[in-house]
Image 1 (cartoon, rainbow, N blue to C red):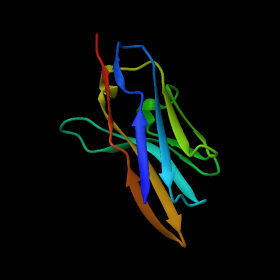
Image 2: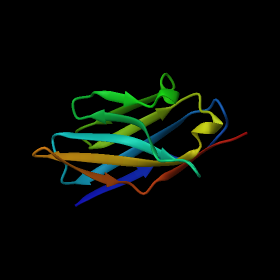
Image 3: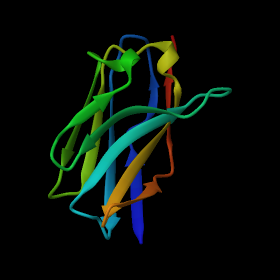
Image 4: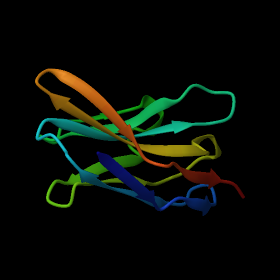
Length: 119
């Protein structure tokens, strides 16, 4: 029904930058949230940043001021600009689409892309 394809991960040195992209296709509700989650080994998956169809954003505290989430509704694509990267940002990053239909939410996930911050 919904496909999410993420790209942009890689290896970067501390202080560097990466830009993640995720394109969604299929049936997408006009009322939706797109976002990025990450999971490091031994840690719970956590929300990094999210953005609603109306542009409201939410960030995990540790990335505030460093990461910026944006979206292009015409392309059904969400971006995550990551600046001033730190080793603790190392994780698999997953793109998420949350459709809202008649008050009910349904989540879809991308394949995950590895971000490694290391010198």
